[in-house]
Length: 375
Image (cartoon, rainbow, N blue to C red; front, side, top):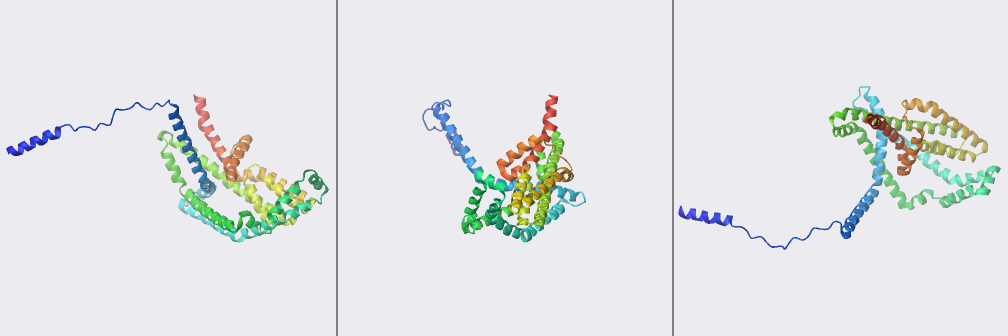
């Protein structure tokens, strides 16, 4: 007992004995943050970080464009899904029906519409120099060409592209370039298809998740505003696609009746132009009129008048009935938003600019302006 108590006592003394600390020297003065070297170092580090982030964003910019296209298609298909839900369909069943219809349309387009579009489009581009040369038969156009050389310039550029008879290969940079473009386009198509299915399926869950981050006292009002914004964007996107398809069908039959070359390719050009806000029909009318002028001045005048009449009918009869609800966007805001969106993201930016502007105006009317009036 005495030995164990003595050992315990020695152990306790040893444990209580202070451990000598290593001497690492005296602490220096803190870094002077006002020193020019410190400021320059931090500024350079921040600039390098910003450059790395900008390059990273630039490298994935194509992915962002694909995501925006998928969102564009999902918002355009959402009104059709909601219409089926009102007929006692579940959302999964409605999404399956709408998405199956989209896939069938894509298959039909790839098997029936795409081959003549490619063949007729290539023929139209290869015949373009001769068609432009035929314009010189008109004395007025020939006089304008003598003064400004517009037709001669276009002919030289078109001949430089189509001189060797391999337009497609020369455009994409050789056979390897064609293969890469085809694979890249197929991959992008599958990516957009999968993302569209995901977005349209998980849209309610995404909205619910976003609303869960809003304070409970404001959740109901924010939810109503969100639903109104989604409805406005979806109605605009879907209606714009329908209107563009109607314009494409009209121009296709017009070209077929007047005997214009490559009517299917012309119709597809109008389909793309019809999706562009504000200036889409102006571009489409110019292209179709020029093609008609290559046949005769009379056909050019008839085509121009018919297209202008159709645009008036579309603006004042077709569009109000299809849209049903106006976006209430002032003309100046429409022009500015379309220009900014087109300059940032091209066609997709131009398409999304107007509904986004309508959503911003809705938020201003319902949130910002009432708060300013009550302050």
